[in-house]
Image 1 (spheres, one colour):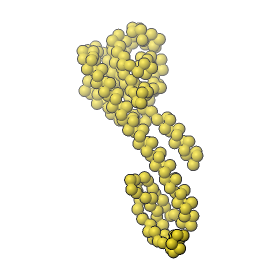
Image 2 (image 1 turned 120 degrees about the vertical axis):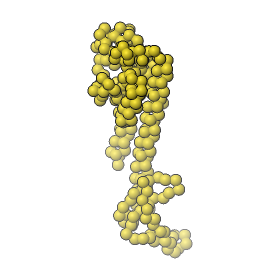
Image 3 (image 1 turned 135 degrees about the horizontal axis):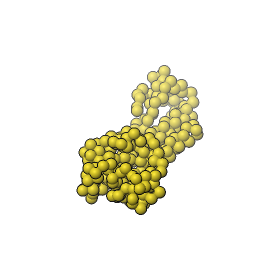
Image 4 (image 1 turned 30 degrees about the horizontal axis):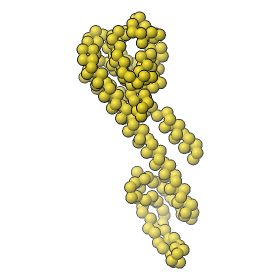
Length: 231
């Protein structure tokens, strides 16, 4: 049991954007099809989680040596606009400094509970995409920040759900242990319990009822067993 609890805590600690990779990829696909600009998402460890166009082949890979802008974005928790990739001072030290294939970039952090858990970026790879990116720069920045909030909200919802599942498992173990302590003579053929408002744990038994001795009234009292299964 202790091992299970430790593994559950470890899984919660490892909870990051990779956990919701599929919905994030669906979001960036939709954005790219509308804006006609490439987009990518990386987690706080600068691991590519999602991407479109030329970036799609780099999904599930680390951004080694080409992550300086995203790293700065995560550290400062501020939106960054790069209109001259490869020549901006922020790019110094990058593998592609002086010969970057990008024509422009806007990136902003994905923030949850005050922590930057990742970064999302709009990227232009040619002159046409560059024009689309910067002609409506203010609108694109506002839109990108809203998408970052949507991803953070999705992350929070998923995290709450995972916490709920963990709590459910702990509660089930507690109920099973309590039943065995209070009624050691009971043979439980099957137990499947969950927490519901105004609900009780349900037990499958060979007997249709449970006879329990009432110490106060000094007479037997019968408690029916509800043969139901909750989630």
